[in-house]
Length: 295
Image (cartoon, rainbow, N blue to C red; front, top):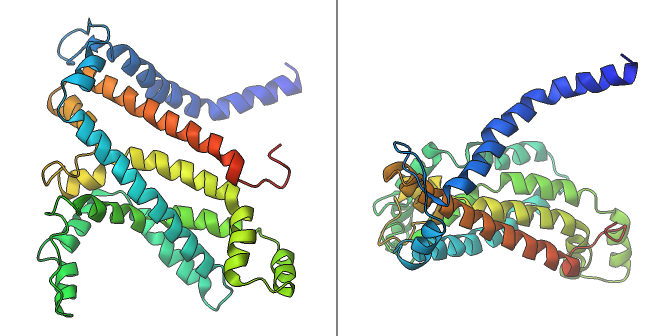
C-alpha cells in the first residue's frame, strides 16, 4: 500500500466515530421521521400508511397547531433581534482595552455555559414569579410589578428574556469580528469629522456584516427549536400563551405516543426553518459586505 493510501486510510479511521454517529443518530432518524410522517405509528404497533393524513389533520383539525406556530414565530421575532443587539452592545464594550477586560469577557460568557439548562429555567421561574425577586426589587421603589409569568400578554416576552440573557456565544463571535476591523478606517473617518454613530453605521456594521449574518442564522434556527424554557417555566401556560411548536411535537410524541403525527409536525418545522434560512441568505446580498465581493 502506497504512502498516500495509508495516510488517507488513517484519516478515515480517525473520523470514523463521527461518521458512524452521524449515520446512526442523525441521518437514520432524519430519514425515518419522513417515512413515519405518512404513517399512523404509536411505537407499540407497526406503522400503518395513511398518506397525507397527518398533514391534513394538523392543518385542519389540530386546535393547538396554529396557536403554537404563532407563539413560536412571536418568540423568534422577540428573541433574535434583542439577543443580537445585546450581544453586539456588550462586545463593543468589551472591545475597549481596559485593565482586567479578560475577566469581564469570561464573566459575560458564563450564562451561555449554563444556558438552556433545566436548572437555569427553574431559577428564572423563581426570579419572575408573582412574589419573586424581581417584583420584590420593584417594590422597594413602590412599583407594583406585573404577573410576569401569569399574564398571557407578557409571559412569552418574559421567557424570551431568558434566551436573550444567554448571549455569550454570539458576543464572543462579534468580539472576534470587531477586532478584525482595521483601525485605519476609524482614523481616516475621524479625520473627516465623522461622529461615533456615523462610524458605527458606515464602518463597524458593514465590516462585521458577514458575522452578523452567521449569528442571525444560527440564533434564528435555535429560537425556532426552543423547548426547555417554556416547558419548565410555564408548561405552555397561561392560556397556552407560551405553548411553542417544540412542545406540541414533544406532547404528541411522548405523552400521546403519536409518533407518526409528531414526525409530520417535525417536518413542517424543518421546512419552516429551511424557508426562513433561505430568505435570510437571499436578503444578505443587499446588506452583507464582503471585501472580496463574496467570491
